[in-house]
Image (tube, rainbow, N blue to C red; front, top):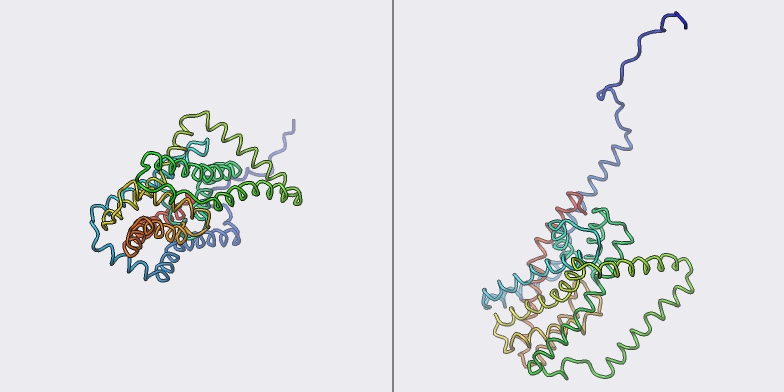
Amino acid sequence: MSLMPLDGPASPLPRADDRPPPPASSARRALGSATARRVLSLLPLLLLGIWAAIDWNAVRDGAARLATADPWWLLAGLVFTCLGWVAAACVRQGAIPDRLPKGLLLASQIAAGAANHLLPASIGAHAVTVRFLLRQGVALPRATTSIALYSLVRALAKTPLLLLFVLAAPTAVPPVTVLPDGRTLMLAVVGIALAPAAAAVVLTLVRPLRRPALDFVRTALTDARHLHTRPGRFLPLWAGAMAAPLLQACVVASVGTSLGVPLSWPQLVIAFLAASTAAGAVPAPGGIGPIDAALVLTLAGYGTPLALATATVIGYRVLTVWLPLVPGMLVLSALVQRKVL
């Protein structure tokens, strides 16, 4: 063993204060990320202001017509609108095996409802939901398959609900005015038959899409089979999917009753379900446009004066779009600022 003295005392451990400062590039990236997040949190409010300026005439006319309506029925319609957020949250939770925090899930659906009115075909709502699921640790394939299951169940649940109301109240609305004619049914059947054929042709010709498409279908079928073995998932999935259009129909019925529309509640509910089913295939932000026109024509066809039918649709849009849009945008901004989205 050597008896030579050490070269010197051991150097002290570095303290936290002595650590080198982060590189300037990292600081710039952090600052840029914070700035981008602030801009994103304010972007929904900016879009809200632009949309209000473009559609100001509809807002003004709707407010003028609703000034003569029964306020208690309008309040009931607003309650039905808020319950629609709960129904959407139930469907979202039922479409995914992972347990999600209830409060944040409901807040995400309030924000998704606002984003849904800015982009067509529910793209805004689905984008917000996918971002929320990713932030909750859900893998991207499972998040996207839950969106597909959500859309499929929402589309399937509306038709039996309409048929149930028609069978339960056959004298409320003449079935010949609700059910489509032969040509429309033939076009629907042809479209349903051609969709899988078109998908098969695309997958055959574009080989890079085969693997992702097959993985997506495999994950979707596995999750759907697994979810339908758990009552805690498939019950809120299907119950929420059937409750969502029924709550929207109740909003129309509440507005119509407040304005004195000469139709009963079953007639108003069936009118909305029929109009939304017929116009649901047309991509539009929040369904605005096609459903409005179909609903006005449906109400007018059932004997409602055209001016009163138009006022009912405007009131429905005020309660389901404009009033929830402000809190929805605020919730969306808050979720982005808190990094929940």
